Length: 109
Image 1 (cartoon, rainbow, N blue to C red):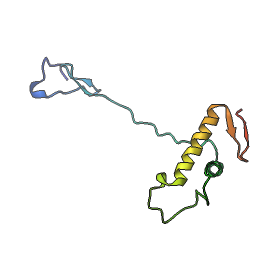
Image 2: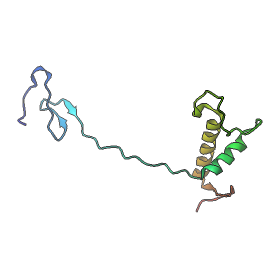
Image 3: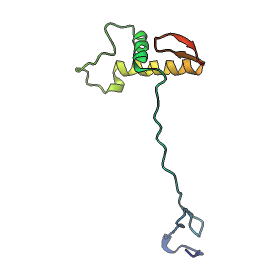
Image 4: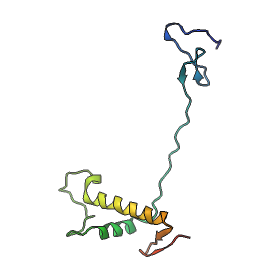
């Protein structure tokens, strides 16, 4: 595309490789597709659920499914406790500790 001194009527045409118009207006920036990463849990879900049950001090099983609760999953007690357990496990991992599959706490290798 031949460079133009001005862009009549606001018709800014960028080069096909991206960048700015000949007048200097940035019209298009090429971007790459975001890479989807699969987040692998630090510990198995059953270990996380056991820790979540320990964080609850009320009656009954807080992680049991409740069909009568109209709230979304992330607003139920089970979702809140699982998020707290995930944060606790991440804090332990950041401190150099890990929860093993049998629920023991040990130094990360």
